[in-house]
Image (cartoon, rainbow, N blue to C red; front, top):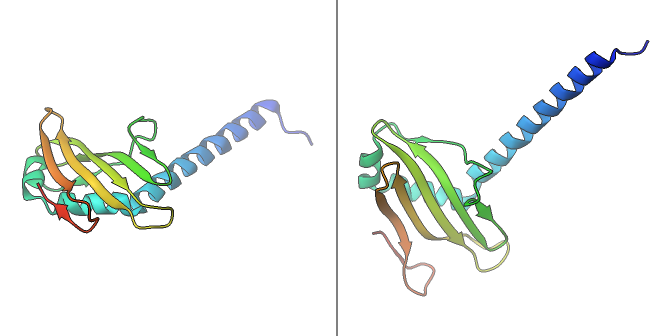
Length: 136
């Protein structure tokens, strides 16, 4: 017995929408598990002035995948992570790199930009040695 065209269109559109939502969720999970993402959040949690400006509890939101600032390739990663707290909200800007594929990611710079435009430095790479870092 043939299925009416209206039901077929409805079923197909629901299946497609669900599939797109699932893919979007899986991409978000992949980003949030990446070491460049985790390293940046560790640095944010270690900066009392940034946490004080945002307020507690600290909320980390999903990336806007359509934002052109978010970019990852084989050797560089650049993210704009939305964050908020009880006092304010903003974006955590992250710049990371690695020497070669399958090597460790190293943070280059991390800073918090609040919605009022205030920028709070969180981390800045210093020196030629990858192990040498400076917290601003």
